[in-house]
Length: 119
Image (cartoon, rainbow, N blue to C red; front, top):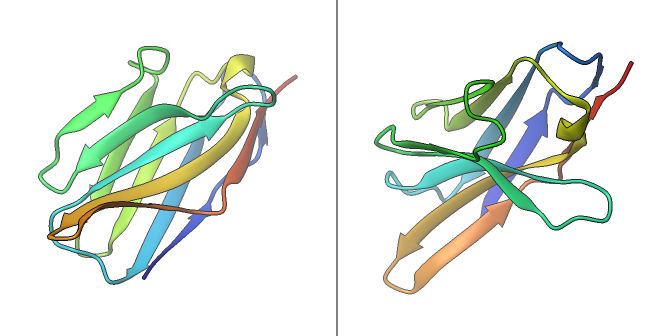
């Protein structure tokens, strides 16, 4: 099993910054993809950013240039630096880990951390 624990969510004013962190533990393979998704009230969960164990990144168009994802493979953690935050960034942010073995691909999720952007 894999456990993901997020931290860093908070209330911030528009234009401000936050950094989310996610620590993974358990049966984690050396090759995997970690990332962040978010879900606003009344909306579907959407991709924010992902990063592979090799360092390849992928961002939603809405956050490109404002958010930066990074990871520490030794610490099994992923960070999301969020700058120039907008009210539309308000959502619950979920950490995700995806890995594949001979049985298939599995996704693991954290419990979520609330980010609220408001004046």
